[in-house]
View 1 (spheres, rainbow, N blue to C red):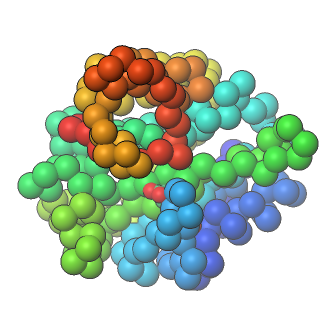
View 2: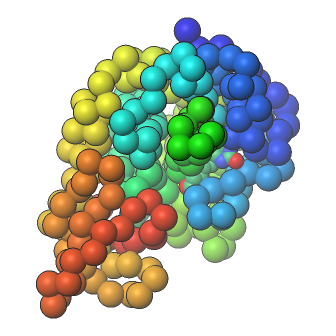
Length: 241
Ligand code: BTN
């Protein structure tokens, strides 16, 4: 059973969860606002207070064995949010984007949620896993820079409370957490639907074809000259969802 903790303000729910989980088996830490919300690749995660979900689910591996491939927690995080949202949004209206984002259709596909997976490592062993979820719910406007790429549930006409979505997400987590990691991985591969698609790497602005999805969630891609490379969740890519 997941233990819930809620705060008015935290620097980052991931940071706080990382401390609390040292002494507890399985927790959910949420906050009305974050002062130092973090995203992947050292980016910041912004969101208006009281309008969005800032949540971290933390797993203590003294109590729950770690996945053989820890990178698969990103698949778990994405599917938890995806499954919670498909209750409200049609399948065409919501997509997973590699590696761990959720997009919704708001005139074009725009990001509604991002997942940040972190592990506390001791030696080579992951002691804890933190699944951080940022989800835009009732925010009605975004900065000029973000407005063409970010959206919220409210912006597509959904009227839901943060509490409802929070409860849906924890229910989905409790369901998917009982499944094997291979089941999670297979479902993620199916929903991701990226195989054979053309992608552009932001780092070199070149196009590649996705040749395979590897067991550790990295992608095998090839360029026009058939040069093969592997990319993982540290790499930013653009492609048609
Ligand atoms: C990303 O898209 O780069 C991931 C964003 C993850 C944001 C969430 S909000 C709750 C948790 N606390 C953080 O500081 N980050 C994650």
